[in-house]
Image 1 (cartoon, rainbow, N blue to C red):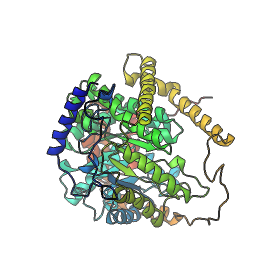
Image 2: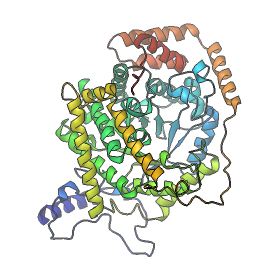
Image 3: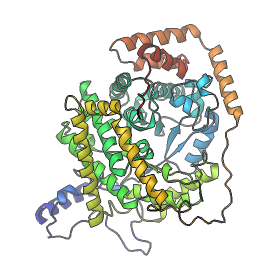
Image 4: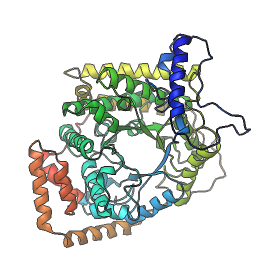
Length: 557
């Protein structure tokens, strides 16, 4: 790019920066030296390829979505939490918010993630163990008791039964007296990544996509600030994918959902701003920063050039980040504090919009209050003490980071081409469905995981406390244990609610929902009515299982 064009770009950025709201803060180094809000090539110097780097808040958004970077608004501290029953998790949420957390992120237990009630035989021994048990809208009320849902952003990490859980969240907000049209938050809903990596589905792909399309339509029309779909790369990476695979498969899934929205007749400029992303921040510091920068650039280009977006907000890739659970070690777990801090710093330097930092004991159990506080304080030290929020994209222009960004982008583009080739009609969606059916995604991830594990076992990849520096004076950790009584109490509460509700109204609401499922009517209103009548999650999901069937992954060797 010629020096004249670079100077014009800087002038555009400066005008937007001057017009934007900034935080009232000290933007200087620890020694008191002032720092600029962004840095770029020296004045009067040509910089080949700078159009792919650009300025913050300007296409292709490599350097961030906003001209102010974190000077306008710092990332949201959104700690992921959920365990036991709704009352116990509610207490943890109040602790997080009281200690400076900026938003909530709900972790559900395995029965809830699979659309099962706590008294389902398949739930035995699992209730409340990896997240909170939610059986009905009444549980959701307890979960957010004393927390203003109209005043806090809430993320819910669930995909298979995401839509009925979302309806229960809406009912809980109604019962608080909230104006539903003002709610703000994110629902994961990403079913593609379940077939690719996490394996928590209810039906075959097509009925799930029907539900997702209905949700996208409903939110666009009725709850415009709420993001009905968070495309998740986190679970793909945790399954063993490389950084480039995580990026490519996640963005391909996102393109599939864009194609879904367009197939429903939705305007890409209207629904695309409601899509968000969820990435893993692993321990390879510079590779992760490059991944996040490449993600914004790729998404902006595809939304503009492939899908016809004309508004900046429709081209923005907004994303939440969680530090890598798979990087945590059971050996010398205190070392995990360091790993998490490095990963969190990579997410921030990559421009994340919100962040969860894992606790040091999460490889062993759900975090204790103390370890959860350390995880929260890790973010707060980065935010308040390090100066990383003073300058937008501070590593932009680094020869190493820019080369890594370009390399990951190229690998992702090659993967998109392969996915399109696998499909029958040239769409990304068709290729994804074929890749799921053939086991292509899972085999690619399995191979990457195998290669990495071999490298660890040979000592080529060194992990402190595992295959190097294994001596320690550390004592065994005290971990959080979920007693069996939690399951018994939850089952009793569910039985009591079933006995107290109007069973005729429940059956009528479920029958109406199934009738809607047989046609083309949007399912959200009828599912909301079922949630209002206190139909349980299992009852709603079982009614749809009876209508749509279930899905079993083909055996592969």
